[in-house]
Image (cartoon, rainbow, N blue to C red):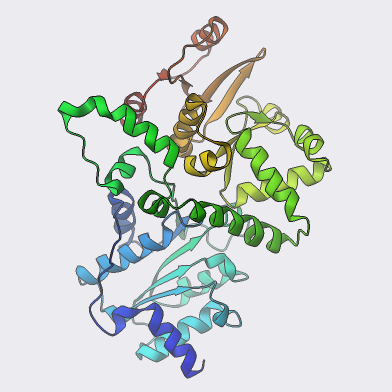
Amino acid sequence: MSTTADQILFRYNPWWEGPFKIKGVFDRPQLTEALIKGISSKHILFLTGLRRVGKTTLMKLCIQHCIDKSLCKPNHIFYISLDDYSLSNKNIAEIVDEFRIVQKLPVDQKVFLFFDEITQKKDFELQLKNLYDSQNVKIFASSSSATLLKSKKPFLTGRNLVFEIMPLDFMEYLNFKGIKILKRDAHLLGKYFEDFLKTGGMPEYVLQGNDDQLRELVDDIIFKDIAALHNIKDRGVLKDLFLLFMERAGKAVSINKIAHIMSISPDSARRYLSMFADTYLIHLVRRWGKTNSKILSPQKIYAADLGIRVLFTGFRDIGSLFENYVYLKIRGKNPCYVRENEIELDFVTADHDLLEVKYGSEMTDKQKKLFEEFKARRKVVIDSPAALDAFLAESL
């Protein structure tokens, strides 16, 4: 690497040359605590999730923790963003070697490595395995692509832990906004919650409220992470597809219907749907049942963030927005939707908890009958944020 490249490494790592303190960053205690607990393990810690959801900030908070608690010397911590064009001709091992050379650190000296956008490097799994096996390292890595989770390669089996970073939930939203609601003012929660449903949980947008930020985020994902990566020339169809997905959020959409509406082939519709899901811009939920039912039935679509959905479709159908929020909160429980004899219930989790989401509405008689007859470990009607919190608390 040239001297200029060395300077780039120093710019990414300001703690090498003086005191370091993250400015203007709001913590997400539950996430940072979970990551901090993982620092002492040998595992590679992967952070995945939507672009700009806060993965980089969380890594910087871990770096801050390592420095504040004197877990290592500041110059033993290395952070780099692997989507930096100036590093495009270097593999991960070469970049780490340059770090050790610059800081005069032997291979057996333990170092903390933080790689942003790890999937920008080809064969990153093998490269990380080699680092893990041959050097004294603690590795953190982030990715905005779900292909990280879908990797079939065995190189990192037993060597990694994955944290999917979701947008802010309601309580985090209140914290970021600096809103404290006293018990005597509990009647205000409903209004604040509706404000949250309009705004969503993308940290920058919550703090700044700039609509252009969300539009730019969506454009970056569509044009860079999907069109450019997969060499798709008709970008207009991708934008139209995204709008269709936002309009149909919370509904089951079949591949054939997507193909018909967009005047594309079913194969193209299937590929595009998968591409959008791989970028975390949408989430897909399968139907509950035997394998054939899961594979052959239409999947339900949910927006990755409520603010993005509202920006492109308007603030309407609060019940559907609340259902989308419930899904985001229980996503880690691998929910499916239930559909029998044309009657639908919202979610059944991998733990076999049946959830029906009703915000300001009631189940129909047919839904009640299916709800009562369905065999489940627990059956819960989620009709408010408090009911959702109670369910999640009981699930711990």
